[in-house]
Image 1: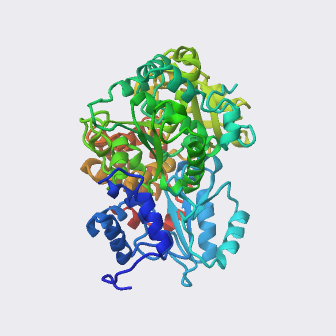
Image 2: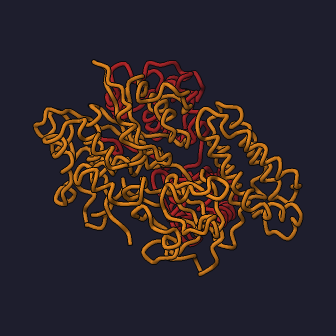
Length: 181
Length: 449
């Protein structure tokens, strides 16, 4: 996809975006930027390409730079392609104390990639992330919207098996996440 | 014993749903406030309750509400801070997941007191499954006449919207949260003006933590004095504690403020003791930002008094020998835990989460991470320990928001109480089974700004 390409989301997606915008007062539609970027990322290829961000800017009637500067600030927005299944493992204190690094090492060995990499077939990406608020159920990892907690190597193996042949990319949101107004 | 005020009905099957929540007396505080009280009377009860902000800062809630500017013709907002991201803290998530209507009820009652007709719940982006739960609860509340126009025939209108974050700890700082809610990068604002005067869209705004807003429900139902009768001194009411780390029973516990720390760690009603019956080494009592204390100082103050789970007792001795209640993120470490390595995970966290606005924080957190990595990797020297101390001292108090302090305090306290562990790494690197395979792979390149 070239950076100057223009795209449109599906009619359904654009309608959802319009509905989200009405949650904010008249003239304050820029507030909808974060939820719109989440929806845009989920409904395209799981990452935010320049044309995708440009379309969000168009919908909100703001400058593209206002979208880029926000997208690059928040860690849940991916500015490069990620694997079909993005595995995010918490690495902060409580998870570390309860063996998160063993879990990371196990995934690295099973997938043959390191933290931050994607498998050559594009099926999996592995990332260590900061505290996901699951400290009492550590160690844990997140795939899309779902938290997988109290991990063991066996549980991880089952997750890898389950996600090996997934057809859609792991997404944080879908069209049923938000209440429509 | 646990003292259940917020979590009283947590075990009732179906309490997540409106019907069951309502059958257990849910939304009574809204009825009471809207039908029998003035907005100022509600604020007065909150003042009397002595409730303090449960997000970490502990500022008196009633006072925060009374600072709200009320110019004619300008909308006011209540914003719920559900950006729970302080390492070691997972209580708001627990509350929203299991009893979402309690938060909504508190928001409606609080909004009535503040004269806010619109409120937002800013939920950290990783919690989309919680957003799903909240959205469902909000739809139920509209359907049953607790939200929207003319709530229960009272003439009061209120709308609640959920707003997702996108992975930035800094948005838990209230002005960064407001920036983010306006669709911008989460850079904290310079204060004053405070949000009470110029907040969301430059309008007067109160930002309160999830647990704080939920506590308004029992306060209005039973009266501020009844709430203030629970707890000790200025630590009134109950507090949700998120317990994690090397303990037998990690989880969220609602305690009456004043429970002895020793009881909290060892009683079967709470943490159930140290995992595998090992020895307690250290505790981070209030989320990653507060000073770490060694076993002897967390169980007893420097004067030999039993340490209690209150704002005052945990702070007894100042930072020399005390700590803070903070968010109630209680992380326990047994004798096998490396204090230096734990600190490394914290410092890497703060470096990753620094918004980059202020040089001392942006640069200092990165330097501290690199130095700690060097020490863990067996290449540190004793001057590195002094350098760490020097850097943290220069970050503290020199930034726009408290993230700088939050990054400095763990470093200062770890060196203050566990300098010998740093020295062991420096003097006998080979004797420490220090850097894991994972850290070897995760080389220093990741510490670049």
